[in-house]
Length: 365
Length: 261
Image (tube, rainbow over the protein chains, first blue to last red):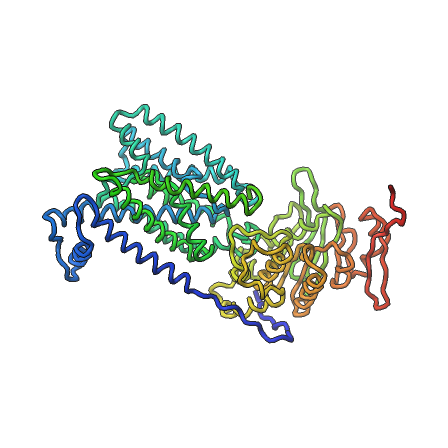
């Protein structure tokens, strides 16, 4: 490229000035999300059948970090409950929420379609089917990673199927995507029904509750399994977030701007499957987080993926922490399925989005 | 004037259909080259081949003595920019964001320091400065087309491909856009533009290539290519070429006075 030097075209007018872009909204968003995250975490850790005041929760954390503070004093079992039950669950909620919301944001980016979501498109149920097989047949040849590995394979397979079947000419029409999702969900649902049928009573019960989605029974070893997947997935996502912006122009223009579109697509799909698997493998199907969170973030700060991806991760964590808080405390002595709660909120939101899309683009754009 | 991209014996066959056959063409620096011809002549396909979007099924398209498709995407993006006929956006980005996307190929290079200045100049040149904070989907067709032009200008390539850049534009912006193409050519850039308006092409192009049925029918200066008889045959409609006193050419369809009822 020897001919890169060039003379600037002479222009009569003086160089125009770009409008300055305000970063205030983005900063405010991140501060609000971070505060909400810490607030929800502390609140969630303290609330439950055994109530621990927020001050004591913070004090206990500081104590463990060697920064002063003290162990929980208000209840003899407080410290143990906090560290062996509450905190693993809070951490898991945070990880699963972040994974689902980031997965949603990435899927919407790669499909060029704001209604793509792992649950709707069938990725979650693909992962769920594979994970159910592990439960029903009692497989454990990969040790504690078996469920996660199968969920990943199932999620990846489902994503590829949806991707190959629903794209045409570089875009995915909403109706095709959703119908493909309906079909994939139906097939996976049939598979899960079969596994429920052939499984023994224990496996059956496990599958049923697992499908409802729950963070009940989370322990540190599970967190240790899920955390690396989520961290790696989100870290990878931030590395190609900028290129997803270019993909919004369409495949050819993105290529004209130097994006290796094929590679970007495959990378994104693998990361979506990884994040979905991480979220699904222990907590079951928790739908709509990946739809609601990126939408709200886009409304607040626009569609740029460099902000959207990390903000969705934070927002997803906050949403699932809050949902889990409700799941555990709405009904005394009962742990509501969290997947039911997110669907209760997400379902109507989805209807609203479909209605809005229909109105603004005069059909299935 | 050096050839930046050369096409030799280029053909494109899709299934049984021969879209292009035996096309020889040089894209030269310092020159505006207009591709003209009736619908389905293969103009857009030729543009895609020259820009490296498609691989020819016969012959070769070379950039720096290498097939244009053999260049790495980023490398190619710093050399050539493409404005397509249709410009869509999946998410409601602001106009400023869209134009800034044009700078993507220069990330991590010294040129990145000029991003703001280049983007500002591109927006002024395409007359979209006042739209900076609007979101792309809220724009009219002509405005979208100008914003996309600004994006291509911000990319700052030495070779620019424009596929019917004036289709959605009003007279003022049609003239502005092609004047801009001339301006780029004056600095040594190569501009290849697909046009339907032959008078417009005659006014702004240094060279024209007339395509019909996937073959080059004529190539040369507008005066050489725009022959009334040839155009009438190619377009299957009687066409008149008028030379105005200042030497510029006007190409007009012959309209029968009596309208058949």
